[in-house]
Structures are given as C-alpha cells and as structure tokens.
Image (cartoon, rainbow, N blue to C red; front, side, top):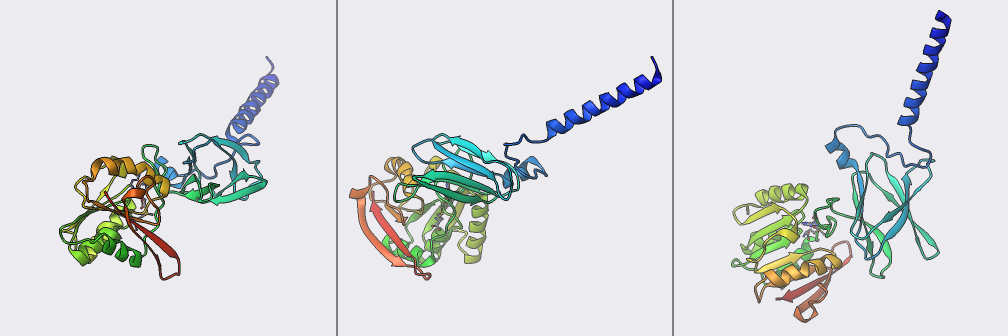
Length: 290
Ligand SMILES: C[S@@+](CC[C@H](N)C(=O)[O-])C[C@H]1O[C@@H](n2cnc3c(N)ncnc32)[C@H](O)[C@@H]1O
C-alpha cells in the first residue's frame, strides 16, 4: 500500500477518535450541566443541592442552572423521595401554582424540601439535611433567647428535671436550663456542626457536667427518661414525632413546643403563650402535659 494512503487513513482514524471523545464528554442540548465538579466525592457531596418531597403528592417542577442558556429540565418527585443535583452552581426551580409560575433560586450545598405552607400551598423551603435515612424535621433556625426563657418558665424546669431538646441546634435550650435552673439536659441533633457548637457553648457556660449533646436522628433515640421535652420543629414533623412521644414519655412529662402545635395532642395542651422577640416577630409557645 502506498505510504500516502496509510498516512491519510491514520489522519481519518485520529479525527474519528477525537470527534467521538468530544461528543462523549459534552452534555446533550437539554441536559442540566451541574457545573464544575472538581474535588473529592465528599467535597462534591457537600456542594450538592438536594430537594425532598415532604408533601402528600407527586410534585412536578422544572430546574436549570442559574444564568445558563440551557433549557430547563422537567422533573417529577414522588412523595418522600430526594433528588440530588451535584455541582457548584446555583439552580433555578420553577413550578406552577394555579396560573402563576413560582420561581426559587437554590444555593449549592443546601438541602431543600417541598412542603405545604399554612394555606396548604406548595412551597420550597430550606431543609436541614439531604440524608435518605432520616426525616428532615426542620431547618436550623434558633429560638430567640427571650422565647427560650419563657419555654423553660412555662415547663417549670428545676434542678430535678431531665430536659431533652429533640433537634437541639446549638444547644441553647438545654444549656440555659442547666445554667439557670441546674437541670440536666440532653440535646439531639442530626447536624454534626450543631453538635460541635453546642459542646463549645456548654464549655463556655461551664455546664458540661450537666449536659450532653448527641449526633443522632431524633426518630431513633430513646428519650423516655425525660421529664421535660423541648421541640422547635415543623407541624408535620411534630405529627411524625407524636407516636414516639405517646409511646416513650411518662405520664406528667411536659412537652414545650416553639411555634408549632402537636396535631392530635389538643386535649393535652395545658397553656399557650404568644410573645414578641426583639425584632418584633411573634412567637407561639405550646405547653403540653402527657
Ligand atoms: C428549628 S431548629 C431548632 C433548634 C433548637 N431546638 C432551638 O429551638 O433553638 C431544628 C433543628 O432540628 C434538627 N433536625 C432536623 N431533622 C432532624 C432529625 N431527623 N434528627 C435530629 N435533628 C434534626 C436541625 O438540624 C435543626 O438544628
């Protein structure tokens, strides 16, 4: 065979290989490019956006990277499912509500949940975690200290109490109960960062001998020794927790809940207070007795 022919065949072969490689590495036209995905698998996981469906119906929505010309992708999320979007880019989510298109911008590294608002309309809220093995009961939002003080006062906390905060955040309720009343306390939270903050605050407050913080799913813990339980979760989360409260708590135990009632425990409600925090926001406190 002529050398020119062999050379031409080699060139053609190389061009085919390069074109095939380029096609394989480019996303298809209407696919979402999740953005830069550099770093280890763990680092990428920390930057992923998760969306969970905490409603009672299948949710359909569209999503696309923020500031991109890519077409939005239509998505369906079944009840209880979690969708994951790896990458380092913000994403825009759209869904229909009657005649309106609702839009949200999602930040990388943040978990979100489709939930109903108080008018039973679909909304996309920030969540606490994107773990599939645990319920996302509420995002991290601290109870203002003035409300914490009132919650402890209403539950008549004293040095003989064992107070559990189910979803304890930075541990403020457990720590104040120990500092002010000498009560023992256990805080449970699924977020390791909150547990580190709680331990650091307990040290600063000098109450480490009275309190303990555990990284765990509150749906999987034994809190039966509690004499007071504090919660600041969402109403649907209180509904999920109620069978555990029913099963585990001793008669007479106080349960004090910030902002959200416990559905089905109406007969156990012993008092209710509304107060304003420094920023003028109103807070409800429900006190129940098992
Ligand atoms: C609204 S914050 C309340 C924090 C604290 N109790 C307070 O009142 O300041 C809710 C907390 O629940 C935690 N959480 C959510 N789901 C949880 C779960 N399945 N198990 C344990 N903690 C959870 C979140 O990480 C968050 O810190």
